[in-house]
Amino acid sequence: MRVAVLVPAYLTGPELLRVLEGASKAVGQENVVIIDDGSPDGYPREAERLGYKVLRHAQNLGKGEALKTGFSWAVSNGYEGVVTIDGDGQHDPSLIGPLLEKAASGEAGIIVGTRMKDVSTMPWVRIVVNRTTSWIISRLAGQRIEDSQSGFRFISTPVLEAVELKGSRYDLESEILIKAARRGFFIDSIRIPTLYGKQKSFIRPLKEGICFLRVLFACRDWVREGDRVDSGD
Image (cartoon, rainbow, N blue to C red; front, top):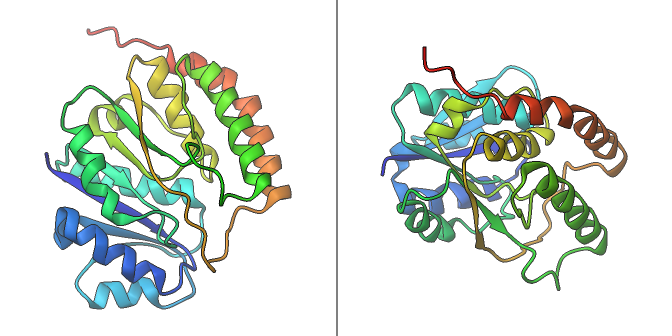
């Protein structure tokens, strides 16, 4: 299976290079792509100097826009699927291998890395937010999704081709789950550890809380769009 690893990057710090090295071991450097979302630090450029493919936004547009740029690139370059992984070290790139092993069966359109099997090191606020949002998204998707906020995922190209994505920030990660599930794609999961280091999170509670309220208001449209069936004409 030919898969691209997409790494959205905005102020990731030096952790970005460690993530890229780990991803390269799993799929080869030529299949690892950084989406520089207008990051003012120099690490995406350092990655480019090291030979990595970098897609660049002139200004910060949000994680959702970075992912859409990566999705479009991967589909247009003939990849069978993508792995998304955060560039700040919150996901262990050594788990890309097991993720792809599970994806190889072809049963799931999306496989989400779930951190909710062991939340002993997760801040309580995130536990509450993740469990609440995952319950809501699961209800709307019609499938159980244990960790709807996890950015570590495999997404097949048929999913990327079947759903139209409109989100521009973290809302896109909920949107794709709902729309894919409503179109009949199976969403599976794989257990991953919860990793929190010194990296700065760009999930701002008030701003992203407002964003999630917008997500809820948009859910009706997402469900309707996800239920659309191609006519086959």
